[in-house]
Picture (cartoon, rainbow, N blue to C red):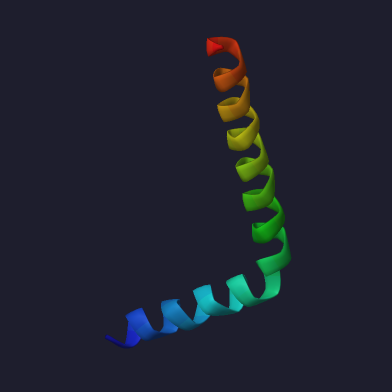
Length: 45
């Protein structure tokens, strides 16, 4: 159980330090998905 708590704290630290990079990556993925959806809708009409 001690190992789980240490790894959880380590993961929490990594997320805390890199949250802006994670957010930027998720924003890019969301934009690509939105573009693909709109492209599919426009091609069907």
